[in-house]
Length: 283
Image (cartoon, rainbow, N blue to C red; front, top):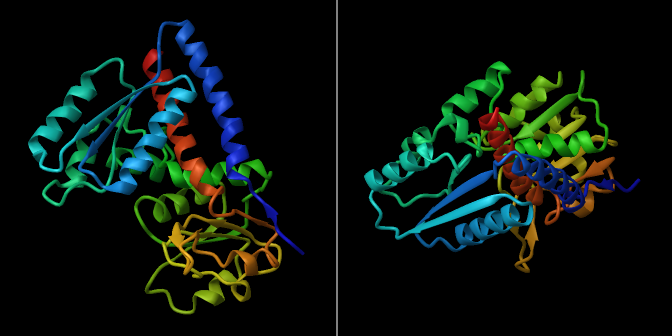
């Protein structure tokens, strides 16, 4: 058996077409969905991410504002900018690109963003909404994973899902989203003993630790669905995930590739969240 690929590029394209149509409908009412992206410093990876986010907005008919600041920007000045964006009615979503320079408290900056504009889903109010099943913004990467499962018609009710990784950005929210769909969820991490015993029981595995080959073919139950959130480089310098793709695809029923899997979905769900923020604000 060779696993079916869950194509993140194709699904992203489909979802972005829907976003563009909904954005057009809002524009007809005089509202253009707006995203402000704030970049502090010159981290090369952050610059690429930010550029991709701004381009995705423009391609989907959303208004985007990119604010770039030197790494010497003070925490007080950044907080003042966030507050100004909170009050700007043309901006529906605010994203402060992480990581921030060491002298700035990232959590303080995230908490300064209005929950109504927290399209990254990192605010404590967004986390609380996810925890309690209330309306809010879901973090983009796990939200994208849920859309991928939905795209293959996968019914999570009663299934056992193992999430490898417990970060606030992916692992923890991923577990909560799976729980909401009635999966039985195990969260594994660096202190977990005998990871293989857990993953061999799993119907769905989400690998999100940023470590190559954390999941190999002998750790996967035949027919399992495997979502690879990792972004690493192999010995040849090529992009790869957390999963031994060549081995696992011989065992799994569905698998996401790296690149072209979860990655494109992250930015797409940012667009979806921004659009939803604009729709809520226009009611």
